[in-house]
Length: 199
Image (cartoon, rainbow, N blue to C red):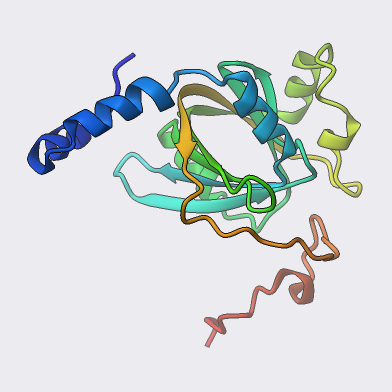
């Protein structure tokens, strides 16, 4: 596997970090998910996803669900559900043009370790995905439906890079109770007027 982008390699030489970078690539980066990575993903209730269109215009977004809403099908494949949102389809629109995605999981509540997963994504219809994974025990009703809200579709990611985001600067947070209104269009629940941009 080719490790590091051309830009990374140029800057490593320029700033004298070749040895540190090579050590990281050798000891921390894989082209698949190992068992510990899978266990971390299975506990997560949220993640951040970065996408870009064909012009390189970027978007970073947030996804959430019950623990294990991101499902690892095998060491090179993970899937996550897309629920009803604001109808803009910023992330999916980018994926339809450019399959490259970067996902960041952060375990804020326990280890404070993060996991980067980079790869290529594609959209899969909900019914088709359910037929495909019917034999996979880990994809159960709890991951298909959140408070009665069925996924509109799934995103399948083929893993190309998986590596640690160190815990050094990640805060440990305490989880407090919050009622989640999945699929709601109620502005009170969505907070859609928070920044008052309509004026």
